[in-house]
Image 1 (cartoon, rainbow, N blue to C red):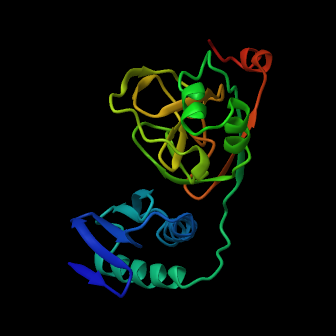
Image 2 (image 1 turned 135 degrees about the vertical axis):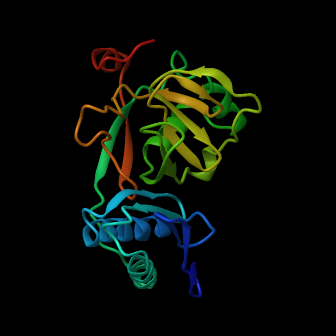
Length: 234
């Protein structure tokens, strides 16, 4: 079953899940609207949903087949998404999360090379990166890995052609117009320019992550001493 409008598309994925497509182009303004829709569907069908996963341009919804009527859910999502998409301004529950970052080559193997490639000083790269407010556009790849947009064009850099086998937990990276913090030790190809000592995912905490899609992130430069005192490792 598939329902379409001029811009919104709601598609049944299987007997207990569907996708709501808001568009095809990454746009932080669209992310804000997706965040509003996500909160609305969670409230409207509270108790009937098993999982709601927003991304850059869509929302995946898994529901309990005995607790939600599929046709009713599809119809509601279609109308609600269309309504949200027409809003010129959105008011959401988004919060601003401040994350400290130690920007230094001893934890940032790509910082100097990125500065040189973009014909900037290291201090200029740090200033540009830390003075931008980013939007949490999607969470994926690893638990607590938030894709943040958008990076100032002056410091955008593509991923490495060959990913590293291990990127240290807390590494702050850039990949094209996105930036992110690695919540765990994991392989990765992003350009690493700093390290954040804040734990970004813990299954024993509620919530498990300090942010969600639609929230805003600001990075605050920190000293080496503060980084080590906060639990950072070199």
